[in-house]
Each structure stands twice: as structure tokens, then as C-alpha cells.
Image (cartoon, rainbow, N blue to C red):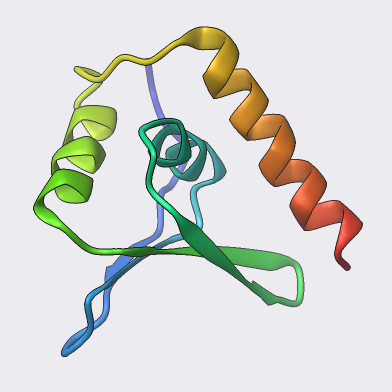
Length: 88
């Protein structure tokens, strides 16, 4: 299973984890992590508070070892898309 390009950035001197990957953000939301959204023209960045648990969940997602409830994941995707498109 190949993934599209994923932009990840950990900001120096910050406790924030930043990604533009909608599906990673949905997975992390499903795992209970809170986030904020930064919109830049046609791109959105999802910012999470960095923690060992968050980094572990990111690793699980990227290595395809993570799991979650499919319905919760689908709902997270829909909720994030609604958040992005309804708050233009």
C-alpha cells in the first residue's frame, strides 16, 4: 500500500507536531489527540501538541502497524473535511 507524499515538520523549540496529511490527522484525532488547523491558501496544516504518545501513534500510522475503529476513522475524516470546507 503506497502513500501519497506526506509533509511532516517538527518545529524547533516547540512542543508542536505539524502535518498536512489529512488521513494522519484523522487517525491521530481517532486516537484522542487534539489539534488546531492552519489554512494557507489551498493547503491546510494540522498542529498537534507533541508527546511521546503522539509520536508513537504517528509511527504506528506510517509503518501501517496502527489500528482503530473503522467507523470512528471514517467519521474523523468527514468531520475534518467539513471543518476545512465550511470555514473558508
